[in-house]
Amino acid sequence: MQGPDAAKVQQDEVLSLCVIKTWQAHTATLSDMDAQNNYLVTCGWSTRPHGAPALESFAKVYDLRKLEQLPPIPFQGGAAYVQMHPKLSTTSIVGSMIGQLQVVDLMNPNTSDLRQASLGSLMTGLTLAPSGAAWALADQSNLVQIWGNARSKVHFAESAAATEFADEAIPMPRMAIDSDEPLNTIGMPFYRERLLSAWPEDPVTEVGFLPPKIDPDIIMRMTPASVGFRAPNLKKTLRNQAMKLRIVDSSGTAIAAPKFLSERARDSSDDPDNGRRISDAEAFSDAALAGSTKADVPVMYRLMEIKYSRYGVDDFDFG
Image (cartoon, rainbow, N blue to C red; front, side):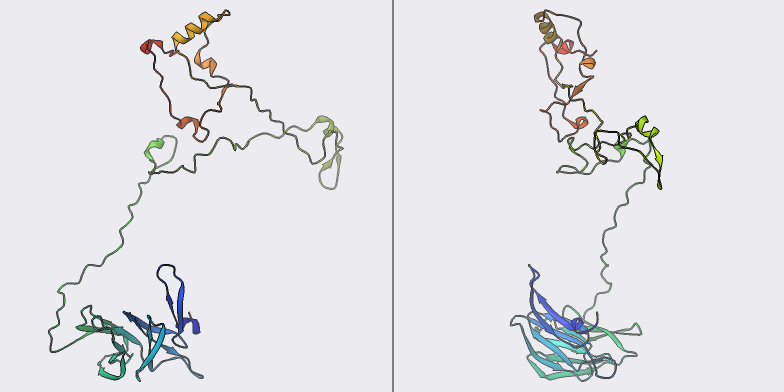
């Protein structure tokens, strides 16, 4: 990101992410920034009238609580890196690319402690230990210098902490989907809501219906045209009007629960026209779904209600 927008500092509200305050910190781009408590320090590049951008000789300081800019920190070497002290809330360390370091108090930027690191190349990074007792410098030669207080003994861990990586995703087993593979081996995830595949039975789309055959009288009266053939309209409908030819048979019998043998015997004794007994297969051959069923659940997944009779298993018709 280039231009003035690349050097802006924007303070947002944590919960709503609304912009609270925006500062134009530098004229080119930001180089480094760090915050501690209510203070923010930035380093960046500035544009020149003729030439490439250069590091600014000031480190900008902002008060995040009062939403105002404080007096900047002068740094003649070109402020490239900045770190706030973890223990001293108003103390910061500013570094340049040539290894110049300056420890300064934000409340009194005119008093500072200046140091010079002997680096073999340009400095590429500056960081402080969480205890504040030491800081490390990195250069372009991939060397790291550790600085600390000579009066106090600086302690370092003998072995580095293990790097935390994201958990690796468990690969799913590969399986062939063909006619010989049972579908129950695929499995289903746990769900609490209705699945998208459970389509209702009302919006049924008719597909695969063959178009009606052309009337032979129309074929006999066809004459060649510039594109295809043309014939007079012999129908009673309009030219662009289509007729629904599929007949929906809604006269079927609604599905009813089968009766026990004892109930059928009692009904047949009351019926004067007692004929042969109709089996369940014949009764359900032309049956349609009743309106009292749950239309939102497919038929194959509906709960089967088992009815019991006082005569036991012998009262069921398994024919």
